[in-house]
Image 1 (cartoon, rainbow, N blue to C red):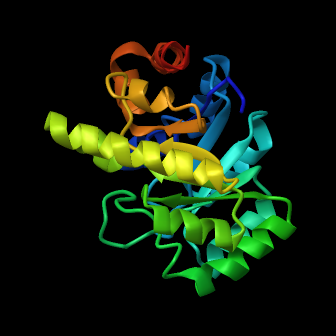
Image 2: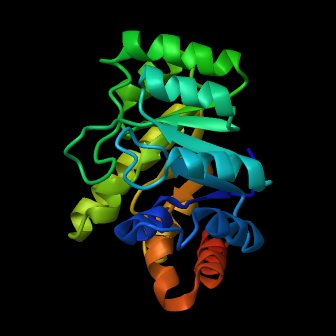
Image 3: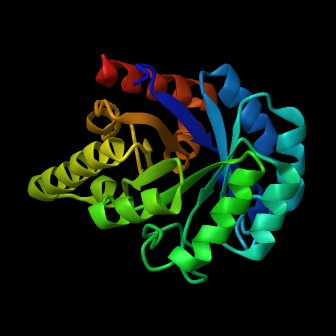
Length: 244
């Protein structure tokens, strides 16, 4: 198990700010290049069906200009499969997308959607794209993910991140621990993400089974106050300290 915990920086919300006005500023590609300088190990971007933040043009520009591996978050649709096969990102993380949600609220139902997911995962893998499934820390879902042949699972840390009472935080952390252990025992590479901040990343980063964390919204928000480079560097330091 690699000691270095990778940090994937999600740049979606740079595009959200740009799209509030239209135009070209701020540029998600510039954010990706800055993230690379600041110590990110990868760039994550979610091309949503409604294109509310990242656009097809952003994806073209990212593929053309970044040297870090790109992790494309995508819904399990034919349209997104076609886009992924055209661009060949390093990785594709399949996430649920419900039109009314503000963000990716729940995990993917890997068990219930087996028949939809299986052919999409197979096509992505045949193209040499590393597939991950974004799922809740649920043992049943982990087993379904392993059965689907996805090599990577990203555990949804949202409920942990949003828990307020100490008992709830502890319960969510215990669920994540069990899931990380169980997933690793099934031979899955374990990632985690959603809602992580300087204050709550430590206990997640300390889990030895995890190979990568994906963090976006918090870093973009923090960048308003400190700049993106320093925000990413501070997150990297917090992850390294927890790992040590």
